[in-house]
Image 1 (cartoon, rainbow, N blue to C red):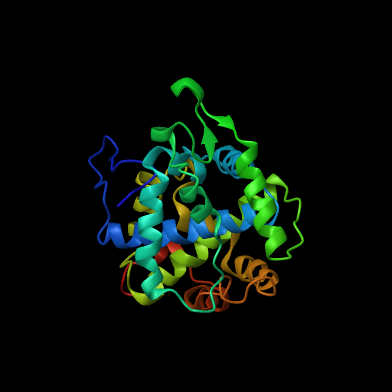
Image 2 (cartoon, rainbow, N blue to C red):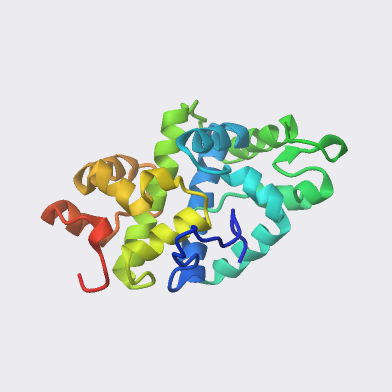
Length: 244
């Protein structure tokens, strides 16, 4: 399972991998990357997405992380998930185009970024043009997303998916999700984990913001029943310990 970071644990001996960690990671990565690709396809660039998430506190943005693990690995994982993909869920073909072009990440010298001479990453206008082409083919009007809008969409996508993980039992506890987010996805530990961050926003506020996004894509932004319940009852998401 490719992840942004290898499994690590803090010095106090806290387990680095949560119960069911790989299944949790797979679902969170899938939704995180889908939300990032949607923003990229509809009006942004990989480097703008990465910058927004790193500014929030992530160790790496989603696109630089994919360049490190390899876009071919990401492609295989997405094709595996296609077996369970809803037929009416939007398909974003950007990664397919990257594979066709042989842009597989650092190991080929170019992925979402270019790595001239094996050095540091450089923005690649060819990649930005791919999104413009695909948007034109789909007759979509692109939006100039701000850094705040990019960050909010990706975090809302992660929170909603995490709530679904609790709802369907893939994650036994909120702590399992927070462990995966911090130790495998590079979520800033200073914010206490994704579920604690969600509680700082408030479930009712999150539901309101998700409702505003539903007209854009009713499938991708369908609100988790766990979030709806939390919004009605005031229960904290981080308090989910498998018995609630």
